[in-house]
Image (cartoon, rainbow, N blue to C red; front, side, top):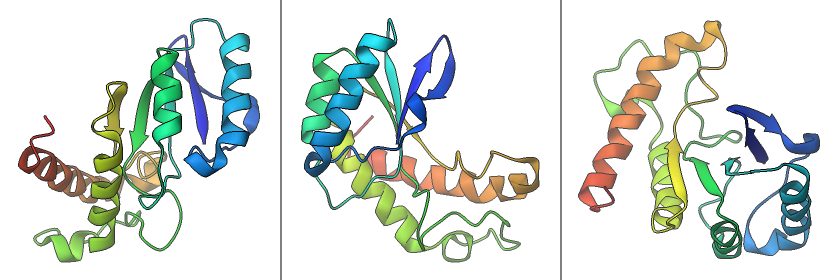
Length: 158
């Protein structure tokens, strides 16, 4: 999914979703080229629906060449490994707070994008906080964030 940051607001460019991995370059490159001509001063993209087993080198190089920063989701937006929107009554242990595959997913995405000079931020749990009814999952999102930060510190990523 490619979303454009324009005047401080995220807009979904033309309402289309694009995979941004190297194998999908024939789709995202023309879309981004058009976005660069249509949206003056395009400077950031919100990227999600990523797959830690794929390469994103071409996308990273393209956005670096055009001075575009990337905000990267490190939690999946679909599939079987999601943050629990209902929240978890037992937040004392990581095992009951979120599935281990969630942390593995985040670690893979961080490993891919952490060396890119145009990675502006990693996002965690943004899909959880999109409505008041899901706010009870905030402690789960917080616990995931703490675990991801520990991984980054251990790997000297910041």
